[in-house]
Length: 273
Image 1 (cartoon, rainbow, N blue to C red):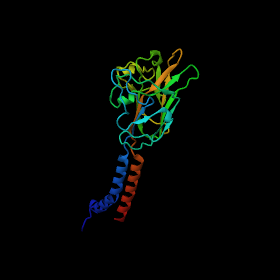
Image 2 (cartoon, rainbow, N blue to C red):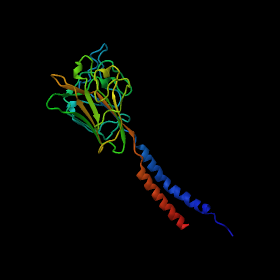
Image 3 (spheres, rainbow, N blue to C red):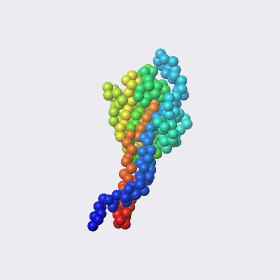
Image 4 (cartoon, rainbow, N blue to C red):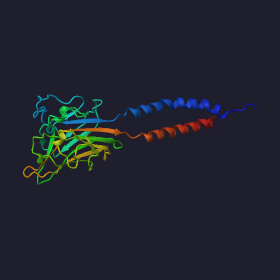
């Protein structure tokens, strides 16, 4: 009597089944891995990029190198479909500015290309001025983000040390209502709840928020000038922003669906055998 081995019977059918679905599985894998992390870098170029004017070096013409989004306040307030820094292509992310009143003075000449911070991105920016009445906060809202991802937000806020120190010693910056996770320089003696824009030029230092989850696809940066200048109020400044998608959700639902279809087909194949 010939004894049939269950494994021997199942092997040809299993091979056919694997061959049938390997193409679909490969397509799914390629689709999932093709979604790269979005990186957006914004230079607030409201001064026409005049270069470094308060130091010994000559003015630096031009815009930051690479795929920066160079925007001017007068051409907003909404900037649609920002450029992805890594690919130079479309990101699908928009940015809206509210309650910014104009351009700030160029940053101190000590700024140089450090990490992602380009020299040209640090020399100008947008500002908001707080007066006694009415008090309005300025916001930068990024929309169209992946609601399942986490993002890192980095904000450069710096001004020349020649300006009056009571102008720039008390601004607060929040992302989705929270203070920054850390600074780029651990020795910098200020945090985002009481940011000194002038001393930030000497370290140099900027603010970093890690693992920010979008709310309905949005991330909001709020600038709250908290100083008490007796005449002009207080000034908050933003020179540049980097937004980086740091954690992309696993395609769990699609994988489970594929495995369910695979299991059902395998059971039908075994039943026919």
